[in-house]
Amino acid sequence: MIGPDCQKCMSMTLRMGEAALSDPIKASSPVRIPIPAARHWLASAVVLASFFETPALQAQGPPNAERWRDATQEWVRDTEGPIVSLGAVGQFDDTHIFAPMVSSENGTYRLWYCGSTGRVAERVFDLGLATSRDGRTFAKPPGNPVYQFGDGRHSILTPTLLRTGDGHALREDGKLRMWFASTWFEGGTGLHTLHEATSIDGIDWSSPSPPQLENVYAPSILKTNDGYRMWFVDVSSEPWIIRHAASDDGRSWTVSDEPCIVIDQAWEKQRLFYPTVLHLDGVYLMWYGSYWSERPNTTALGFAVSTDGLKWEKSRHNPVFRPDPERPWESHYVTSQSILREADGSLRMWYASRKAPPFVNKYFAINTAVWTAPPQ
Image 1 (cartoon, rainbow, N blue to C red):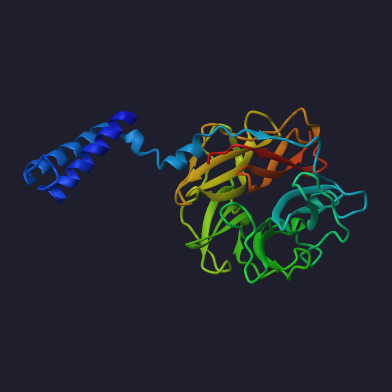
Image 2: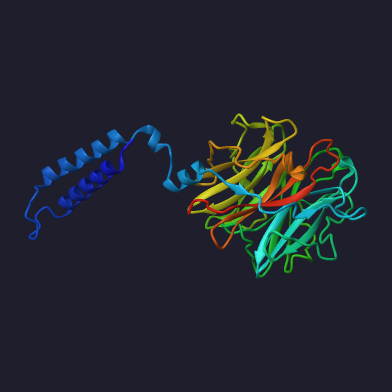
């Protein structure tokens, strides 16, 4: 590996050689280097650089990607309890609650979530809403649920907004664009389809679009210079994996041939799920969930980086976020997360959790944590 001093030396050597090639006889320069000699000097510097530049260093990628990949993520749970809990008996969200989708606009945080009543096999999820001024203390306004699929069978699952690279909502024509997965749990096929809806106020939403893709769960969508990009869980077969798709309009999608993330670290088991993707410092960042092999009936979050959104490198610190046995409402599951970069540069995450078995509640509460000093 090249040390900083050696890198500086070679950089100066290359610049001197380049200057000699472009202007070998400069009146203000006391030293005149003939062109052949300059070329020989420059070639020697290039050979020297290639000698020190080991294959391992070449494979590490740009410095920003390295800093994010290798950073130790210090997520701090900064509330005393859940920020959104199950509804009262008889309400639409009295048994299951998960998949927070969070935006911050005009000084207000809005947290949409999937809630359901009834037994696990019979559940039909609708979309609820809670609001906050600080992102930590939420209240459910009257009128929940704010959105339903409309046929009494299909669920609203794992919603995501169109977002900028820092995770904030991106409006188009003044409207929020939301995508979500849907399935009929009692239908028996297990087919999950991708749908879209739009809203001006986040309360009144358009009817679900026809299916845009099949076998899609937990989408995460950014608008970039290359168009719309989506990362999602492919649930067409076991084990579940994470794929990428691209679109010019956010409606017609082309799925990339190769998966983005597969099970290949020791902590991961059975399935991957719930990707959340940001694009910061020229680097794509993905937090994703898996069953945690170290503890039964437990999930945790892993982390990976990419320079193109297609080929990803996982953190050696995975899992970077884990359940907390000291907090009974989140002792076993911590997934289906939403992440934003705040104005002070910190990252805040909202996530769903599950308590210890028996799992009467598919998910039990929604919580938050903050990473105050991510790479800058």
